[in-house]
Length: 454
Image (cartoon, rainbow, N blue to C red; front, top):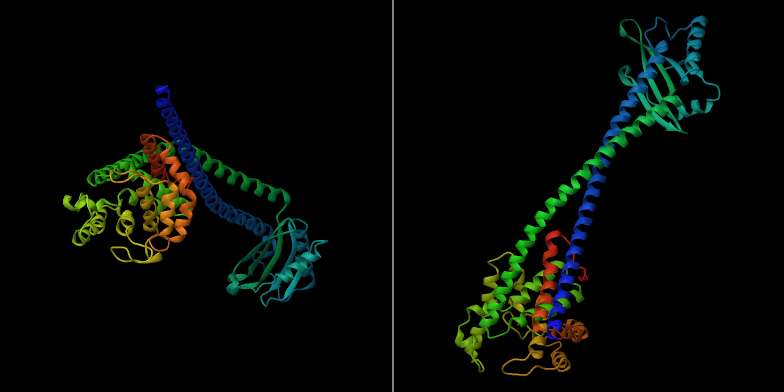
């Protein structure tokens, strides 16, 4: 029976660790896929937009060239004086204009150098298009430049062009203006070619993205392993320091784990941000690190300290801050180490801070530290019941402790106490380690612990 009791928690622990590892692996895969999808989407959108712009420009040039080729019969150099057209010349030019509107032009107009309309031809049934050109009437270009303007209306691609007509010695003698309609076959060909080009780009980017996935996954796996190893080393160092402090202070290392667990759960319940949770965990483990610098006769004195000795004892908070500031990774613990002896009414030390001027992490830790001290058995006292301990804390609500935080802690404390005391000490430490590690190690892959209520 004994062997069965011993092995069962081990199986449970292994299963829990396996589930956690699987969940982390799945999160990594989802995160990589999401980032690759965002990269694919951004590249597809950017490259597609650039190619679309280039292709549209190319097709516009193509259509413009077609329009110029057809209009050359009227827009080329001509010996006719457009300002003084006789009847036969006018009829001849009108016939040429009629030939253009029978092909791809909807409207053709000839102007003299003074911009007076001389010849006009409109395809039958396109009178509304003539009205449309009047609504889009433009200023004639300076210096006789070409003018073109594309419009897509009622499913038709139209090109409005204005071509200067040059006479002898390239003198400006008039203007050719027309509305060129791209025939349906050419329009469909342009559309198909554009879609094929965009599809080819999308497929190329997709194929490249899929090729990158195993590469990114491998690199991320290696990076995560390095980050995990580094964080694991830091957590082990934190644990060693906490144990050393506990041994120095004739305390048990399990105290560090319990107060850290209580602080973590209270922090999660009140909605601490992820970064503050990490600092709270570190601070809970190393809150008394400054006691390393207190001499044994004072630190280990069994009786009550004199006022002078107590003043020396109080310096452990500043000593702790000096130690923690030497490490950027541990510096976040300074709030707890420095201010966990402050009291809500301002009667604490070392700064005599009052109310919410005391950092939130320190106010949280002050509650759980006293609670664990009361409910733990020590050589000089028996453990209190949870009910008696919480009653004692509530007597100091508003004086020693933040009333709002204490009210929240009172509501969750019985369940938390049962969670850490209903199992063997080794199991409790293993459980708390997993809770702590989950918050730190998920930082390596940018995950947010599911238990965090931010």
